[in-house]
Length: 124
Image (cartoon, rainbow, N blue to C red; front, side, top):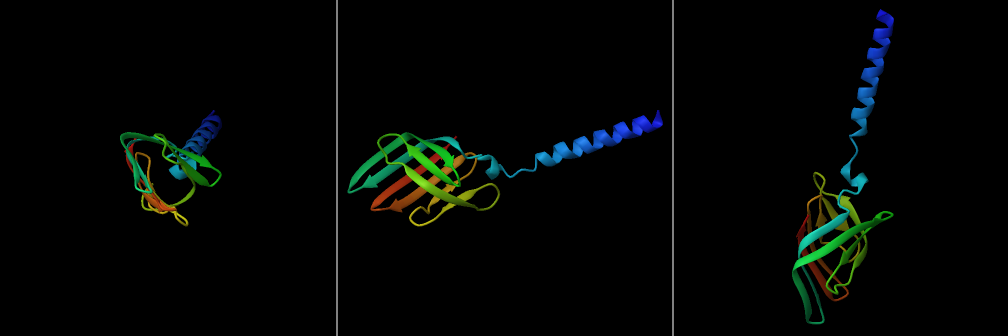
């Protein structure tokens, strides 16, 4: 009987350790900032400004890059790569796509590319 209790205890401890280690996954590996952010967005090109204080940006992941879909006839930004900056905060990298900072609850953007400027200050 003592041997059975000992074996059961060891199995219980091993199971607990395996479950605890499973939760050590980096949130970025879980696409924690994929979703919809709401707030102030704007787009400026050729002197024409589109601005909304109740704008919406939907973030999706395709492979290793992220796409930002705007409403209000603002062109989308696609193919953005990120690198980690601090605790669970990420900044965009790449040619013409720098200026995006994102985490699980906020999205801030100031991107200038091809004569156009996108800005965003959003939360979810």
